[in-house]
Image (cartoon, rainbow, N blue to C red; front, side, top):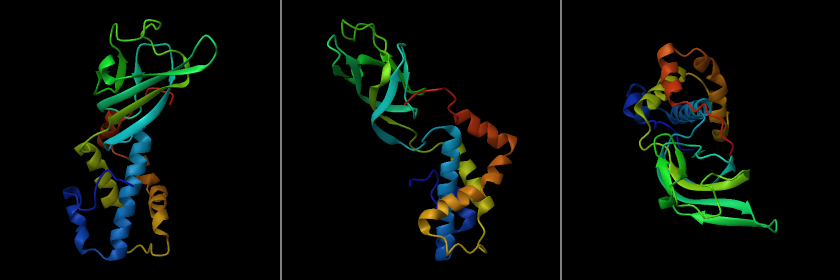
Length: 205
């Protein structure tokens, strides 16, 4: 799993990763996974730059469609599936030049006169009938988000804790559960940071 912050990041210098024992390094890596999982779950988004292929959305007969993981870095093909007069499903691919893109907020709409003559410029109603190809997220990860992750890791890191009997693949989940209390007691300042990146809109995908 790609994490929001790497063990050798300057924000974690105090932990001196390179000079830790193997078990302690494993713990720190697991804490980075736990922090990433919790922050992204809370904010309803994946932060790191990622390529998305065929991200599905329900057409809503509205002007705009929002991607799941803004900001949009680049938009690829948009596919819309509709039924023809015979009831058969027909897919139409649109290139990115047919759309107005609000990169920071992650929403797209047809440019005027760029859609098929038989359409209205709205995303026609349907279940998962709009498919988006795009690159979204942040590169690099925003420093305020890395700061929150680093605070969790530093707070939770305990060299005296024996995690050798826990499978490597389960360490992240272990610390995720253990860190719940930490995230429930976030300072006001930290909550403000997370809230500023949190996606609240209801979007079907």
